[in-house]
Length: 499
Image (cartoon, rainbow, N blue to C red; front, side):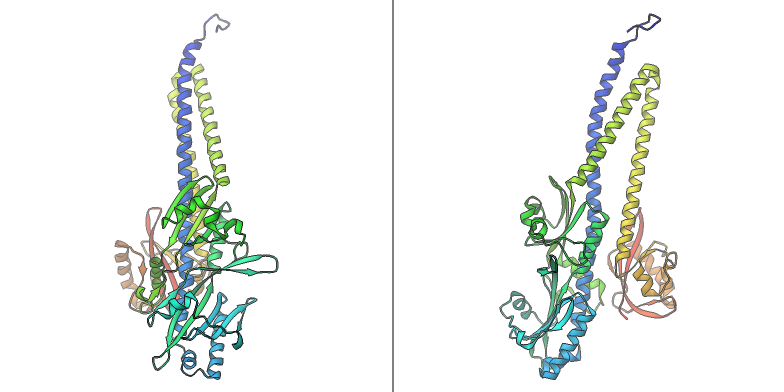
């Protein structure tokens, strides 16, 4: 090529320099694309693992409170009178006690006393969202049922927790699956004679609500509870209910055989399959029992008194392939545009300023790195906001305390329990929530805990008191859960008012 001055443009030299760089740029772009996709998938898996960890706390809360009430129910005078005398008046009093308990706890679907022969003596069931007393002529013998055989063989003081039971309810316009957990305990009369079993069947609206909230935060992710027999339950738009379409989630193992092979063979894991990313976490009986023990008084539950081998289920998160395809497309477009831009800059640099090539490439790389860093920080911010939403949604009082003892985060339940106005707990020292005589010693105990942080209950073996905003003292139980927040040690404290 010759310009107007008759000089020759070194075309061969230009292409000799450009083509190898272009080939290298394409290879690097493909490698960077794959690395970015792998990083994106890993971030998705990590985020869903955190979601599942938060949701699993709802299972422990549901079972813990119900087991506590069942244990307390066996101590009531009305129960002892009924099992001692079984007179019509005593039975009516017991029916009234059961009915009151069901009215105060809308999640209780059934409360029953079944005697040692397997015959229902008192039965309260929920019908059209209201508890009713089952008539005597409708009481049945349950001695042939598996759950009766399991519970009747328990030793004194042992408590049984069943697996999830899936029952289909017919509504006005559609069917819904209701997931329930059964807790039970044997009872004896004042003479020490075996008098059967107390049962409470609990629905799980809080668990379904947690799944629904998680799905609203990430609409392209499905959250499912899967039993060990392969049945799955996913949230519907209505809290506490679930989609009953058998083509979607009713028989999980049949609908998703590929991922079921992975899920059924491991307690925790993730997999990238043709239909998207799957992340799962099993709620182990041992872990659940530990959560229950941490949420109740130290002399109430021990792991030897809980029989929960039937309660084996997994929480599953599924990020759809369509959502992942959008991310892959965005990554591909960004890298392709970036590659073309870099090659264009390089080509023009060869034409006019070959010697400035190195500095221009360095600037482009730094710009790309800054963009990636900004995107990463935005992602971290979004995850932190989701964590705050999950804490706020909890019905248990929660505080996040830093290493200096300052409250940096709390939910509305904690403010309501302790009598503080909204936003006034943050920034206060957690020591102010203790009686004045304990504050100086608590600072030392807090420092010792942070040197060896572990998930445990606070003040094990002794009563704990919290001071409310108006100076009242209330009995509380506190669970401590340490974790790292941006590299700094903080503690998530869950507070339950037991006064």
